[in-house]
Image (cartoon, rainbow, N blue to C red; front, side):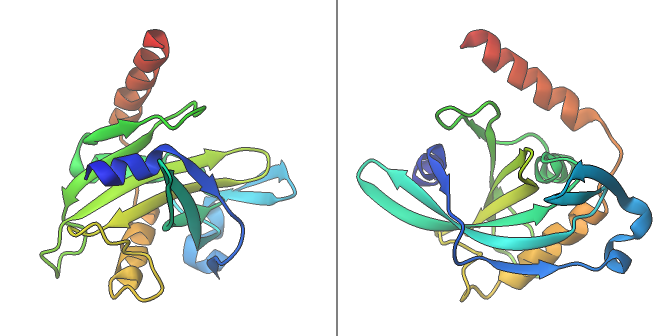
Length: 192
């Protein structure tokens, strides 16, 4: 698990080798989208997303580097959607990681059962970005043997995509996560 946390400290996005799926308005519900002034993201989706993609992310640990796969849900209403869904379902995160220069943490949940039909416990890292150029909420998922579960050859990749897609579409209205999250962020900033 320590290796997993260290891998998340320095995350450098790259723009090649990603897979993407566009979700139609009928799947997300046109009534759940909101117009924006950003031509790159003309709509954001409340309890939904425009599309998803799996993006390989370069991680550096000392002198070693490797790619891990991040599942991104694009054009979400909040970059905190994956944080909130994990909190709502599994309670407070186990670790928070503050990558160098980051203004918000990456959250980590260890040993959580995500897929009902399996006994596997997963580690989930949640993140997201809200900027002029992009808006997404994301997850990185490892199994109990620290294997990346979002690779092209993973036998659980589709199940995980479906799981997180459904959870985003069914987010509850509870504000408890936001109170706990922003309290932690404010405390970290004061102690810096």
